[in-house]
Length: 422
Ligand code: DGY
Image (cartoon, rainbow, N blue to C red; front, side, top):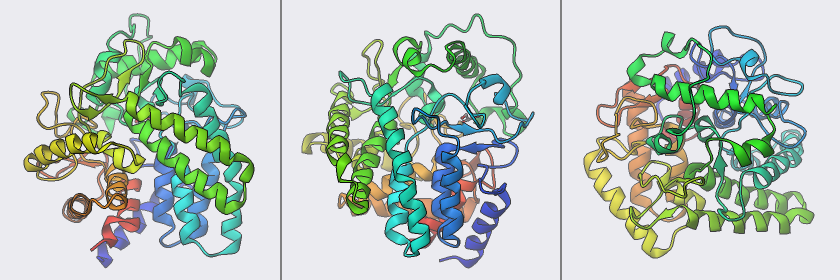
């Protein structure tokens, strides 16, 4: 354990705490983001359990009546971020975005339930159960078509892996000819070579405009939206979260939903098979409009261990990819295959390493008895933060920070995981 780095990590969480909710980092992301907040709760839990639960409670205050949980909650307007609340025009009580993000909440709440003894705080965690269940039901209703069984995203931002090359082909057919002129704000806070391109942004904005035109009708978006891709990251995360929710249901005595949650699990397990690409021999995302796999090996591909899926043969193929990538990368695990021409070591989700994905990978590897992979991920993560600071992401080639700095979820992962592994 490294006392000084621990202290810095706590200070980052405290300074990004805006009163019951935490911003990912000042400037670049001035609101509450869904999966950021949930991971951040793990960091708070290492020194303030009550504050940890508060982070998730405030997030769920923005839940819609149908169970949907938005990816951004706008508690006030900040002209320094685009697109802000007046552009999205979404949210019932509290203004929000109209798309969601990876459902890590059930897994984090389950982890907090196991580690927290205080009865009052446990009651607050238990009170979140129906909200989690409602969100999972929303996914199953709108985003997990029976024929795929995998989670379909309707905007690249939903995956959290905004500009992964996985979205290039499916997004290329989005019509951007009618979007209104707009000004990007992210480039005031981060260098252009670290961020998505203008072409990416035009597509992001066209998709927001499409959703807004439907009045954020999720049935219409799911059936007619111009971007509908079964995402390997979301699918493995929801599968894992479903198992954790099932476990919580047992612990909290919700026997009435056990059968239903088991059927969610079975459907998502089928979804993992839908995402296996026989020609690239990897798990990857798949366009549900064209039926085409991306064919790319990304950090999300390796979440199969976290999702707890994979036959012996599939795992052997994934091991070949691991061996090839780990021989090349100074630090593991790059968000995109370094042998692929789209790899870009400093550009957001086209190469850089993300601590929250590393955390989920390590957890999966550990549970599946893959001790060497777990050790490599944990050691590289620890070294990246200790030597380069609490960056948004890190180059797998040089270790340098990319994107924003003083980043909440990186600090949280240090406190809750890699800073305390050694
Ligand atoms: C951004 O603004 O870059 C976010 O990732 C969108 O959620």
